Length: 476
Image (tube, rainbow, N blue to C red; front, side, top):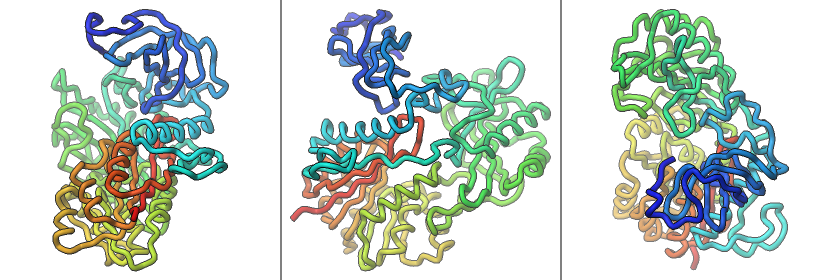
């Protein structure tokens, strides 16, 4: 990782210097947070409580980056990663840390952000369920009984390597593809399909897309699997509309793997880094598959968003429903509603639910999902939440509960102002980024709400990510 020139930095270390660091915490990408003479170094592969030898690779004004060379004093929670390409692949960051320790650290990461960024007091003893509840309760992280093979969606980039095609994941911090036909966090069906498509593409002479060589070909293979239904969709992404032998390839895939219900072709002629384009056609079968979360059924198309870990999604949305405290007479607004996943859960117990989402295609999916489940008390509208919700307020819609589930950047400032102005009894905040969550909680606290409790959920085991569900209530 790069950095500022050495002359512009007053740090106790220099680039390329070998240092001994004490690791005191973990970063939001799973990297160890090391200290050298009070200076912070982010060290991938290092764990809290360890002393390590590292080489400084980049410097910023207030922190730097270092490469782990040797663990001098290992953590008792350090384990041997089971994945053979873990050291190269960027898909996971914490396979070298025992799972129970991961859950503890993720809870601590959330609590630290609440205090440092949100300026909130975290109640003592809540990690074990003991002690006083004076302050915000941060519960123990909800983990998985079996934290492997949990992803129901995978996006596999494709490239060329010596001897043929490379199907895998990007190496950490690069666009170099680590060739691997097995991944321990995706389904066995996905593993089988990746191996099969790689073999069939090679036999058919289908090349990988190469932007530098301007070579047309496969860019990605996307596989979506219904966790409860077993229905599977395959999306072949190319850079142009031409895919030689597409129908024959699709037929062979469908015949070889039971459960495949849909095979689609997506055209993405956009810049590197984009996964899918706007044009999708069906090569074989249906244009969608189905899955359930709880007792709500969802239609999943090639371009629609759907949570990648349905087991933990059910835990997360169950907590959101609990925090909403619905009795049947409430009006609920669901900002950033996506394809209606949370909205439809809430609609089963609310009087009326209004959902808003920026992406029009997602709103179309939300309306279809409502119809699919016979839910008539949910209304969906496309547009920016920070524009639509103030208009709803002007039209006389008053929310008893507002639910937000924003992207990693957190809520728009205008939306937070609107929530404060609408004065709902409760706010339920679902977050995938503890730092922006804590920032937004501070705004809501200053606007007349009290943060009651936070429930971390391990949606992505073996990675540095943690999801949270938060209850806020309006103060008098």
